[in-house]
Structure formats: structure tokens, C-alpha cells
Amino acid sequence: MNAQSRLLPMAAIPHGLTDNLLLSMLEHRLAAGQLTVILPSGESRVFTGSVPGPRAEFRLHRLRALRRLITGGPVGLGEAYMDGDWDSPDLAALLELGDVNDRVLGDPLEGHPLLRLGLKLWHRLHDNSRRGSRRNISAHYDLGNAFYSQWLDPGMTYSAALFASPGESLAQAQERKYRAIAEDIGLKPGMRVLEIGCGWGGFAELMAGEYGATVVGLTLSEEQHAWATRRLAEAGLAERTDIRLQDYRDVTGQFDRIVSVEMIEAVGERWWPTYFATIRDRLVPGGKAGLQAITIADERFDTYRRGCDFIQRHVFPGGMLPSPGALQAQADAAGLSLSTPRCFGMDYERTLGLWEHDFQQAWSRIAPLGFDTRFKRLWEFYIAYCRAGFRTKAIDVCHLLLTRD
Image (cartoon, rainbow, N blue to C red):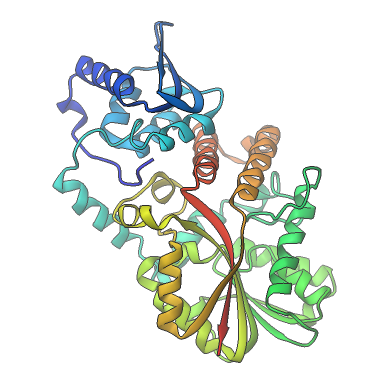
């Protein structure tokens, strides 16, 4: 769906007009696939496009969901889901259908000047300054180790896995991903490595334990710092690893290699030049950096960067996906050569599907930690939103290799 949601006063649109407007819009604008809308009364409306596409069901529990969709676009749709206004037996398929049809399920009305002002203010309030970054990271990653350990793989890896076969486990595919990056950068024993965004320490453990590297890992999450420090000590790697609660902008010295897995998404567009300059300045001449980055398609980037989507609003405050073109421009400006060994978006879709399954299986253990049904539905929508994006190629995930010449 279009990343920029629209804003109109809810009370300004009569209920009947909103309902009829959305249903009429679906009937006339569904170009691909099929959508079945089930109204609270039990009545069904089936809308079929002129070409094949995803098939999905939109089951309305409260008609106010239509009004929230009209006034809030994709963000309003997600918030209505969080509040239990609607359901779908295949949430990702519904969001995929909306994306394939471009605005069929969002942004039917023109934007309001107050929206543009509000979006600018939102991004300013969630700017990734040193203080802002710590606040933004904490909002997501400090939900607690007890929460994430219930549904992530045993290695606690919260990024796309790289699969080699249909039967490969998530844990095996996560390790494959780490090895692919290590091989891309030519990691050798004795090398000094900086990991920007070390998470719970899984990659640091592999680099220090199997490749014989010395690793400095950075995180702004106190929960991740505690977990990673403990796991590396228990693995007997305390002497070869240094996990720091530190901003990447404050690191000094130089390193043979740098790795950064799905951290650039939390940097923010304003700070991309600083991030790439830091990579350049922290690398020794001839040094290499391996990144894993979620990207948004170049043709969608301009609209996306001017908006505020569901994930930025409710999941990753301060987040911003770069486009391939933006990454190339930043690398060029920093004097770094850039290549892309691989992109594997559908492996991320598979990773997300496994997370969704494990999250649902673990919910009976997660709820007693203090999380309510609205939180559960937020995560369901978040995961489905991402799965849909990878299916339609609106977003991708790639390994990038940067070299300081």
C-alpha cells in the first residue's frame, strides 16, 4: 500500500457515505485478484478484478473500520485491526491484494495540509540523534528478553534468514546468513571486527568462536547488552569480544572489517551520511564492510520518505528504509565502493512466516509477561504487513559489500 496515509476529521464524513464510498471504490478499482467483504450483518460482497491476483477476505466486525480506513489509509487499517474492528483468515494475503492494486485499500482521499505538517513533526520528534536513537531502539528492543526468547530461534536472531532448501530449519538458515556475510568480507583469524547493531550476540559469537576474530559489538538496548554479554562469557569468548552500550557515532579507532545486520533501517535518512562516513573512517585502508539491509523499491521511495507508515508509527519509531539508489548515492558520497552479492526477499517472507507461527504458538506464555490482545494484534499486523511487502517486491533484503579503497 501507499506509505503515506491521509488525514480527514472522522466526524466530517457521514457513516453511510463512508461505507458506500469504500464499497463503491472496491467495486470499480479492484484491477487484480478477488476480495470478499463480509459485513457485520453477515452479508457478503465479492469484488473481482479483470486479471488474476491474490484472493483475500475482509471480515468486518464494526463498520467503523471502513471510516478508519478512509480517513487513515494503511495506518488507519492497521489501527482498526488492533482494536478488533475486522479480521481476515489470511492477513498477509489481504495486505498483498491491497498493494498489488495500489491504493485499493488505502489513500482514497486527497491529503490535508495538516497531514504534511503532522508528518514532519512526527519525524522530527523521532529523530535519531544520540538521545533519540536510544529512545527509539529501547521502544522496540527493550520489550524484554523474556518476550523475544519465546518465539525467536535459539540463537536469538531477529533478522532475515538465508535458506538453502525447503527443509532447512530457521536456526540453520540464520547461521547460513551469518556465514555468507563473513565469507563476503573475507573474515580471517585475528581480524578486528566492529559490529554496528550486535543484537543478542549471535553473529559476534560465530565470528569470534569459529573465525577467530576479535569483535567489538554495539547496541543501544540494555536488554540486548545484558543477554549478549552473558552468552559470550558462557561461550568462553569474553576475551575476544567487547559488547558495548554505545552509539556508532562515538566509536574510535579502526577495524579490519565492519558488519551491520539490519541496523541501517534504524539510522534515519538525516543520519545516513554520518553512518556511511563512520564506516569509511572506522575501516582501515582496503577494509571491507558487510551489511544486511531491508530496502524499498526506488520508485516508491520518494512517496515513502514523505509519509509515516504503520511500522514507523507503531513498531519502529524513527525507522526509515533506504532504496537501492539511495544506498548507492550514500556509498559514492562517502568514497566507498558498493556491490550487492545477493538479494533474498522471499527468504525474509519465509522467515516472517516462521516467526508468525512461533509467536502464535508461544502466545500463552507471552501474555502473562504483561502483553494484551491489542499488542498481539499489532504484531500480527506488523508481520503480515512485512510479508505482503516482500511478496509484491515493494521491499527486499540484500547483502551489501562496501570497500574502502
